[in-house]
Length: 438
Image (tube, rainbow, N blue to C red):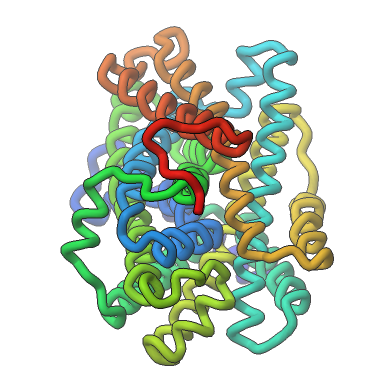
């Protein structure tokens, strides 16, 4: 082991010791919250990945501020289900995929695993392509070259996990900060109509048939299937609880971290829509591609805004691609008990992205459609989480209350209903109250 590896492992060791001090009551205050933070920050990167960039740019450019309410609703649903996922890992020391394999027959878990693998590939398509697009535009290199560099950079980021969990948590946290600061700068530069933004955030409206596809894409890009599996895995062994008192404390810290991390992620998503609405809607409604957005931003808001946009996209692509690969590993190992080397997993999930580019498919269109695919798979882990976290034989005193159960069921029903409406729209069935396309 190298000196650097030893140092990184020592950082995780110190974090372990600090967590034990917090659980024992020897450490408190804001410092204790920082020590306990990590899993929700890592999971939150799934909520600001390049798929979000693609759907949010289209939402803002085509429909202005009117779809901001979708971002708000999706983020509230995400908070609830990420909290449930984290709680499952803390209380049972088992992740969601493992729980499915233990409690359900193969005829249920095998289709779930296959659907989850499709979701993992759709996720990686968005994340990997987004990072490559950002790098190719920022450095002025061909997209395929950007993909190759992104692949190497992502693998280097993944290698941090071998040196201790804390190193990866810190690096992901820094990249989240880069994305957040970038979009804070963007909304300060863009001429935002804050009154319209406020109205769009609280008044539900689907202004056109195409808006429904984008709305479902926003949900698929916000509430991510792989993030629901991942969060339970991040918490299951990070700080093993010795009794119910410690479990209750860990769940309390986890809920606070979920609230903080996903509030930040939600604000970043809203800032993406707001920036696109302010910059493009009304004069450049046809901006639907990331490269076009970058090139259009330069004359509209200046080269600084365009450069900041690319930096945030690159940070998003690198971090979310690494996290997506971790989730894919967890899904496969949990459902089928097979663990493969990270580089093999990374190679397999990169193939669809290279194929999309090689075939000349519009990369941003592929990003949006990948998010719609995720939205269709999403009800599976959502239903599984509700079923497991409400069972007292599994969760004991930490089983969901009736209020949490009801909220989770409503959230799942909303996702399923939107998917059904989208299917009806695709096959040409008229939907009362929804404007026709065109």
